Every structure is written in C-alpha cells, then in structure tokens.
Length: 475
Image (spheres, one colour):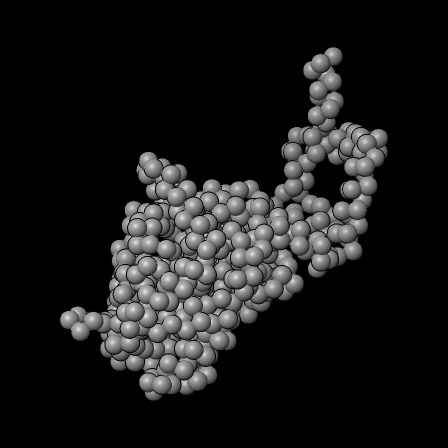
C-alpha cells in the first residue's frame, strides 16, 4: 500500500516531501523507468516527425496571437456556444466555478456525477465541493479512479497514478472489490470497467475538462486514450465542461497543429486514440449526446498572469512532456510539488495560482538545464519563467534565510574585489582542488550545504584555475 504522505504534503513541505520521495525505494524505481518509457517515446516521436519544428512554432504562434486578443476570442466563443443552445458561465475563481456547477446540479436535482479529463476541476477542488453538497462523484479515467479510491492527488498530468506500482493499485482496488483481485493489469482494468459502466448510465451529469475550445464554432475538444470521455459527454442528460480562459483557440483550422504536437509530447503517439469534438447539446436529429450543455470559463488568476512577464506560461497545453524530461521531477515525483500541477511547468503555475509566498520553494526546484523547454511542444521558455519568479522572490524577500542572504552578499562583495576573488580561488584550487583531484567529487558538504550531498555528490573545484591554465598555454 502506498504511503499516506501522498495525501498530506502541502506547499510548505516541499523539502520534507522531496526527502521522503528520495528515500522511497518503490517510488524511485517507478520514476527511474519514466525516462525509459514516456521520455523515450517523446524523443522518438519528435525524431520521426520531419516537420516537428515548423509545426511547434506554428502552434506557439497561434497561442501567442490568441492571448493578444483573448477577450475577443472568449466573446466569440460565448456567442458560438449560445447560438447552439448551450449555456456559458463566467467564473472569476475556483469558488465561483464550484458554485456554478452546484447551481446546475441543484436545478436538475442531480445526485450523481461522472467526470472525465479535467485537471482544472482538480485545481478548483470541485470533488470536495460536490461531496460536501451530498453529490456522489465518480472519476472515470482509470488513473483518476484509482487515486480517487486511494485518496491521493494526481502525481502526473498524463498518468495521475504514475507513483503507484501494480501491487499498490491492487491493494487500493481491493478496498472496493467484493472478491480479491490479483495484480494482473488486464484483470484490474476489467474490474474498473465493470465498476464504471453502470455509473455512466445512472449519472445525471457528466463533467469534463477542455483540451481546446474553438471560438468560431463553439466546440470543445477532448483528447484521450480511453473511451470514458465519450461516455461522459453522451450518456448523462447534462454535460458541464470546465475550461481555463487560455484554452480557447480562434478557428477549427488551428486545431490540427495542436493535435499533431499534443499526443507526441504526451505519450509519443502520432494521435491519441480518441479525439472528440463536442458541439454542445444534442441536436433533434442526433441519437446521442447531452440534452443540455454548460460551459464554465474560469479565470482563477489567469488574467493577472496575462498582464505579467510570465504570460508565456499560459501557452501550456498540459501534455506533461516537461515532467518526463525534468531531472528534478524524475527524482522526487509529483506530490512533492504540493499542488495540482507538478514538474517544471508546475513550478511556474502553482506559485502563480496559489501564491508565491506559499510555494516559494518551487521556483528553485529546477536545475535550469533546459530539458523542459526542449521537450515542450509549444516551446515555452520555462527556465526563463523560473528565473523571473526567483527575481520576484528576491525582490520581495520571501523565504530568504539569513545564511542565504549572507552567502549572496559575500559572493557579490568578492566579485567586486577582483584581487580577493583571485586569492580565494587560487587557495581553493591549490588545496581542495588538488586533494580531490583523483575522485573529482565532494561527498559531504558542511552545515546547510549538506543538503546537496545527502543524495548526490558535488563536483570538486578544479586543481588548476582557467586563468592559470590560460597562462600556461600562452607562455
């Protein structure tokens, strides 16, 4: 059974949560395979796609241009949805979005909800709000269903239960199974299918997220590898879709660019198994679909981000590619980040949505190696965004300890005095550098610096400074 620490971790516990993740052998084994599975598939998919760079640039340009006139595109989207007989609700924050959902449910006296494909609903804690109102909520994505039964948060955008082994999943599902289950994956999937099929037919309301919303047609696009999304949008009488304001794209002709990059970035597929374009409520001549369609358009801080230097974070299409590439995520997993969004993009989004003071560790949870930017299908400059957040932390003096302040001031002072800098670097290279010449690594650092060497070695100073080597080469 997995540790309850996956439930407890909050924003201020990033360091402790990371320590626990590094000491969890099962989790380390799972994360170690991440680069060999999803990460490798991502790389292979881009290498096999001759026009990948041009298509990624085009997708990025569409996002950039859309955000420049976002208000107009959202108004067009609203008008298109209304023209098809749908309903549109504007939500300034998570509480307003939850109230809008509850109002629809109360109007129709709905008591059971099935959900599919919605990280945004995790962001606004929708399940908790519905359960407190006495509504039964059932997650129908297999991974989301597992973590709902376990009481966990998602650990990955694409694989919510990625942190769990097959035995962990078996232990969790045995809590709701009348007969003992083995850890055979086919058997586990078959059990979940039996559990969920009846819920689709019994549910009053289906709730989904939105991968993309097309302004000119009023359509929403859902992309998945499971058929539950289509059941959620077609069997219940009411369909509610929840989207962040950044999910809109202007035209149907823009969609293929995103379809070509999203699946490749997420799972290495050319195209996801299911791409559903939902046109609102069922038309009179159609056999399936919801009788009523509601679109909730969520701000929740996004309009403030739109006006800030971190605007580019709104390009994100929630593929998870940056998580697969990130050396930090692949060591500590998703729960250490303390929010709904993990990994490099989570280190940007979570402080923006939840407050920089509460999530002050996350902008530093990166080596700034650039692997995330290389993996991103819309080329978001994530390292640059993290540096900007660090600048904000420095300017606001949030979570800056005395030792850290002293270290930076000492370093700055030394850099302003070249003679002292040269003397210190000469002394270090002639002592520590030469002592550690053979191994090239420091296995233990003193004091608070010991956090670095608790789980990895630190590169030792070079035995010969560059300036000394240069003199030798030119003498």
